[in-house]
Image (tube, rainbow, N blue to C red; front, side):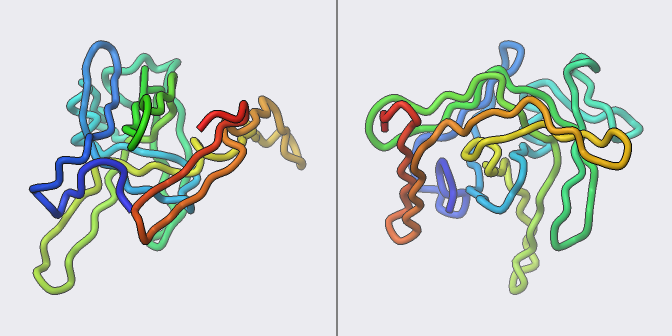
Length: 178
């Protein structure tokens, strides 16, 4: 399921997801991927925000070095390290009521590209909305033989319901709001 307009239906007028950084804005559609440990934006979306990888492919130009992080993710194609940063805001449209606004929202920068097996047409996802915005989190680092767990944060939502048939996601905040 997609959050924002369906990229394969040009007539879809669903409001887009908005990402902001440093006074710039990008509108995009994000794949809802509850199996993704981290959220990401494509290199094209990052470019709309004035951000790109330098020639070594590991450092983001347009984001202060001390505000970058890297994370190794694994998937069908193997493991890859990506660099990320914190968006000023990530704004998700809602069907009724105010949008969901994530401030200082962490995203990795990387391309997830699929190829249609029939037409051989390539499509790069503008963004992936992963479980890091839906579940609680902790910062884990290795110090010696055992992991060090710190900066534990509760998730923002008490209940999450994903209805694929009706293309809806229902969220109940920890404070009881919807």
